[in-house]
Image 1 (cartoon, helix red, strand yellow):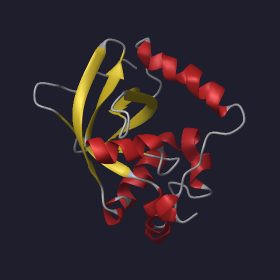
Image 2 (cartoon, rainbow, N blue to C red):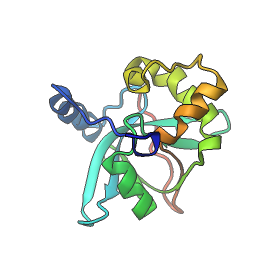
Image 3 (cartoon, helix red, strand yellow):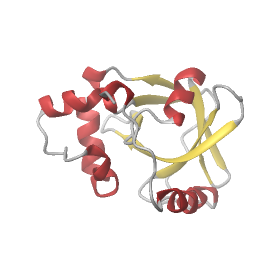
Length: 160
């Protein structure tokens, strides 16, 4: 597996835990800013959902980071180019643009600062204190998308 195809599938009890945690945003409960990401399947066209952490930078830009690598939601979002963030009954439609590897370094660092406690195990020893060179080395294995609300669809408010 190369960094360009890196994917860490849920193992052990993680699939069961993930199903439980995915229910929380449906109920309007957000843990540390989490949302339910909905993206149309690239083959089926049906909505597929998973919980994600939305990274907001100091300038207000928002990003989705895939700590497990090139997952199904990443592949679907690449094809669809848009999706929805859901929290309870609130839905925000967005467009997504993938960030080039060179632009990921500060975003990966910030993501680890905020959610390293939750996703650090997927970064295999790389932390928020890593050098830029270390983050650049792993960047191809961690897809990142900048998201922008579609016209008429504002951000789903934080309820945390």
